[in-house]
Image 1: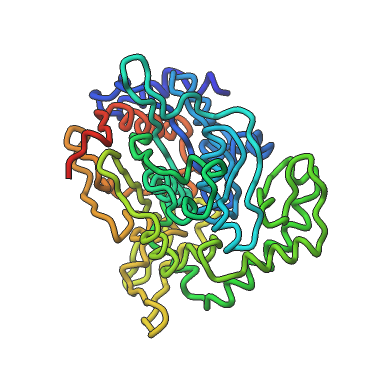
Image 2: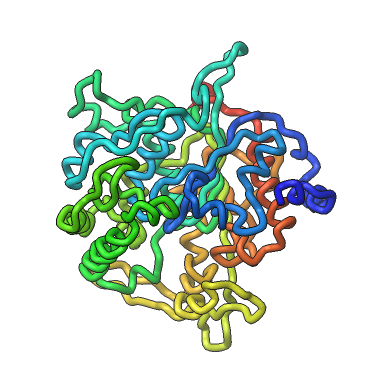
Length: 426
């Protein structure tokens, strides 16, 4: 199957890749980050359905076969942005996930998570014999987009409150900051950057209680050893799941953990996908950084009808096609407590509005000017694509064309000139 992914037909489809970056100029590793409800390469579920590639493709393996170092870690399908970023650091560098003294106390969960014996990216951040730093390129889908933004911000700035509260010998390197030049470029697909209209229509109290209740019920099933082996929720810090080899957590512990998730703060994925939560995320994790290249891809699987509603295109066959008309009919007046949204939010990839999938509203952006005119420190908005939300994962796509698309995304980043943080002037 994987050899077939590199057949002459796939290589012919790479003719759609601009000739200027058919050859790599950089050998930076690529890290693929999944979105909500997603999984990583180590999950058994990945054997049946790859997050990037779906059934017929395996994008991480394709990258590696083409000489590109790559990994696709599992960060927990329902974890909040901070927890996902901390776990990503631990997996890439090796060691135990540290959620921080302040953060874990504030949100009532364990400070430490799982331990990873080996780093996924060896020598990341180190200088080679020529004095060049080994950086990474990040690719993220859906909720993975705000995750890698936060990850980049913590790399660069660290966490002042964690530094103040933590003894020096206990402080995670992640919270120290000063690593802005450890990332070369990042690309997002259908990113949940500015909030979801599907979430925004519900009262936050309802979302909060419903979210915790849902996790309690799911955890009762998914913490059974065989279920966890197939699909890992990675909610150990709340005792909703058990660490590998750990003691099974009781229903009472799970209920207590689920209650802590319901707190309406930045420790809940559902809160971070509201308009208010997305704005808080952008304030807490500033960007973009002037030595990093940014690209955002958005899909439009709906079209406006004569009544002003956005409906799913008839030719689209996707599990989410029936959600498109709901997203395409939403409109809400603003109140004193919550912002509203108008008809411009109706066009979507069936789940994520185009306005959300493009750049974070608080950050500068330009329409993609072409490869030779790309500048770091600003979001490049790629041309709107005729894709639904799952198509960026490969669902419903011609697998060879999808492979060529993912190859072009990787080579675009790997052929841009390196900009070090020390070289950037204000």
